[in-house]
Image (cartoon, rainbow, N blue to C red; front, side, top):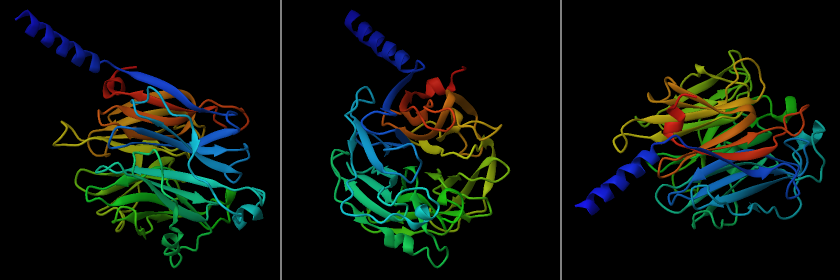
Length: 391
């Protein structure tokens, strides 16, 4: 009898510890290390086996989006306790033509090669990880891992999918994500994208937002309807997606319009019939990447929960105060909000592990006060108890 009591005591003690607020932070990439001046544009996914893949742009110089950029990845199989060394996962072969819009605006040199906007999707039903990236903001490629992110297939060019947009939008610049894409309940792979004519600021403006999708596990890709286009709202770009409990897909859109609030649009299938953009009064927009992810869903969980993260700064465009918000009504309101990094912090991406641990991979700190140049990319691991606790 004493043995039975002790086992139950241990069980309840473990449960109590699991419910304690928990927050851990680990810097994965450091500016100036491994031959790269900066690391930017973080993305993270948790695979079906529970492995974490954290990936980013590794920039040889601090000159901006159009310099020489590689894509780096680190992998963890123990919930973020340890990580593999960083490795380059995209190897560009042969000479590459620089995007003419970058040269026209003097944003880069002709011999610089830009690999940009990495996006991963962890397949729910296998060890597969789908991975997309862009080359020179002009071409898009797909590759796949079938061993939980250890190795990836040779890339396949899917730029023809973007050519399907030409009749509606004569783009010169294309970009996926960034961050992560999603897999719908019916298996559809979905990646938000943005396009630009490249004639405006930084050759990324003016712009429009749409999606690409695959219904055959990445073998073929198709374009969706254009969701929004400049000037309504002004320069819509980096967009994130989540599937709602009723099957619809909700996009959350970065833009440069007033009011300075994140924009949202809904589709019944994630590809067509997008609703008019609605601005969310609870989600300030400092013109920066944000992220959304589903934390839980009934009936397997007690509540439907969605998470959102971006720099919460309603005053201006300073990239500070990366903050995580929680919705229990499918994104209609955000009842919980907690600052993750009060200081300088910017781009961020979210993932949820099989045990419901939450991971936020984000830019923090600053190298040069005169420009936004992050000091590091950090993974924060926390639980729902920490998020809901009072600061």
